[in-house]
Length: 237
Image (cartoon, rainbow, N blue to C red; front, side):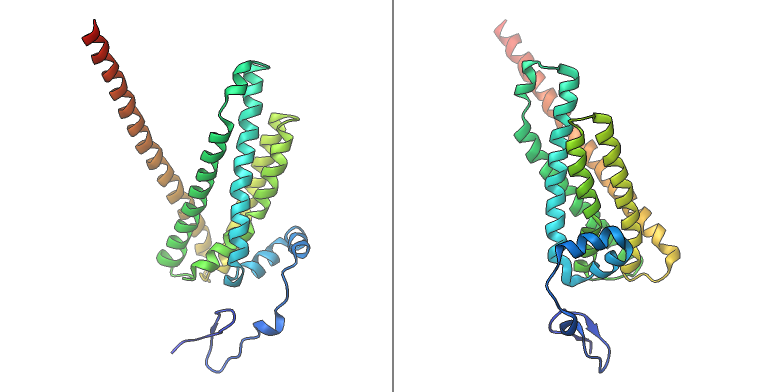
């Protein structure tokens, strides 16, 4: 019968004593940020642990907000580039856009983590601890948070510079995610690339299908609206 530590939940071998309490200390934000930039791979390894899954959730939430803020900055600056000081800019529904981007960020995060669990844990027989996968994803997203926030500010200086900085942050985030896969239980390194590729492919396929589905619904509603107006004006005339 499997034995688990009552403090951190780590699976223990027969007769093994967990050392988690001996190494337990308060989380240091500065140490975490410093480690992520000085020794990023070692930091990803350290925090890709189920006991840090709550920290990961906080980071994912910050990412979602950062993404929404970046999109607001992007839309505002692009609109200014096209419309200048036009009064139309004041009627852009920024709050509605912000809420939509929040839901978009939530959907993206849930989709990626869900497919990563499916591919890594089910298809490739890796780590089945969902909290550990959330922890790995959350710790790797810190670089994307910083790039989005900095890019949102740079957009007010130069739109192209802001987009380039955001793209570079996304590339670095991708590299960190790829390296983080090695800590999710699949020991054969030859399979890590396939895990990442399949996860991304499933995410793209999901969003393509979702876009097509939403497009069909939108077209149907527009057709019904046009048909309804046509019937009304035909009857009126």
